[in-house]
Image (cartoon, rainbow, N blue to C red):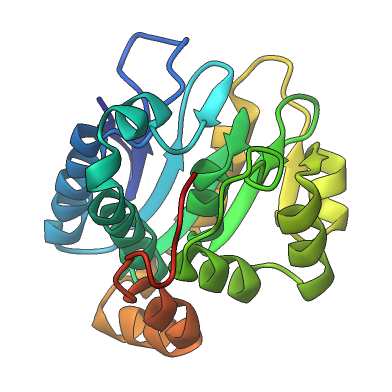
Amino acid sequence: MPYLNRDGDVFVLYLGTEGETDNENRFHPDWIDAVHALLDEVEAHEGPAALVTTATGKFYTNGLDTDWVFGNLADLPGYLDRVHTVYSRLLAFPTATVAAVQGHAFGAGAMLALAHDFRVMRGDRGYFCLPEVTLNMPFTVGMSGLLTARLPRQTAVEAMTTGRRYGGADALTAGIVDATIDDPAGDSVLAAAVARASALVSTRGANLAGIKRGLHRDALDALAVTTDESNFRFG
């Protein structure tokens, strides 16, 4: 399950289980609940603050929990709506947010990174990828809204329609991430993300959240659309 650490005024939300490095950090319903609980904890903090999300090992997050999905297909629309709440929460979060993408960010996990204000990605390892087209899976209205709002237009077209895997350098060139760090020791990406977040801890508060809601209104409106068979068909 995800857990929280502190580095000064920066909260670091780890997407996987503490002490384990082989997690894919997929969006199981319990994982979603745990992320929201930790975000509640960050919001409840008084004083300067910022948020970094990261993970350990090969994956930042590998996206939807497909094992859970195929075992609970009748519950898929409600599950996807719950996934959307994580994106919406981060888009309008009342602190600066930085994704420290130390490994693979695939599908819904790539979208999680895009819901942050900024992204720092490992340049020498890992991929950003939206594989839905190759898996014959549609995007929800909310996911499409998030992707087209947060990616340069032609990058969104390429990423969504080809399933291209972007390494760090390619992701930087395509406007997907804000910085890349070659990280053979495995800790420089997080350090760079924390440094970026630390410079913004004074912006925390309701005013920042309001600015973000205005910036991301179209994406937030799309993410609020309830998923059903009229706008999403799987399989």
